[in-house]
Length: 163
Image (cartoon, rainbow, N blue to C red; front, side):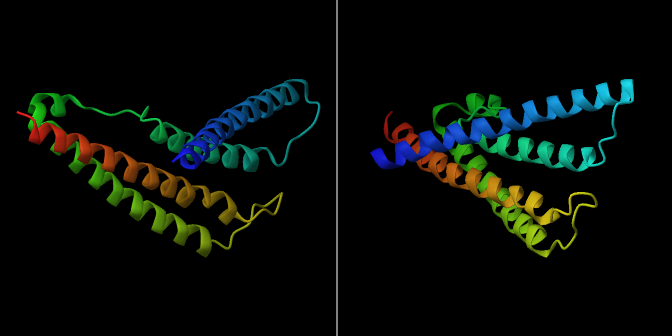
């Protein structure tokens, strides 16, 4: 169990560090592009390719980081309205539906990444490398959803057995 916690802690650090790094890189590149266009210093031909890739990586890895920590947007009003017995069951249903969506996202994202034959026009980077972030983030979110499902089932069992 300690090994899993250590892996989770390191993975959490990486999942937070990647979007922050992408954001800083986007800021620097965008700022540099504004300055270069204003003063007509140089032209950055690869600008669009890098911005698109960094933004996609930032978004999908950031979503996985939020999912890991349960910090993503979630409306839990109905769980509270349903009370001690119905709320945990609704939580389980929500997690199962999320897992189904994430499984489809992982499969379709993998299909998209592996079938993509396009390359970026300037840097000649295969677009499939950028698309690979989709199934990777979906698989990570799916793994954390399994954890959430186990926790939710245990919680529901305690709520249903205790009067």
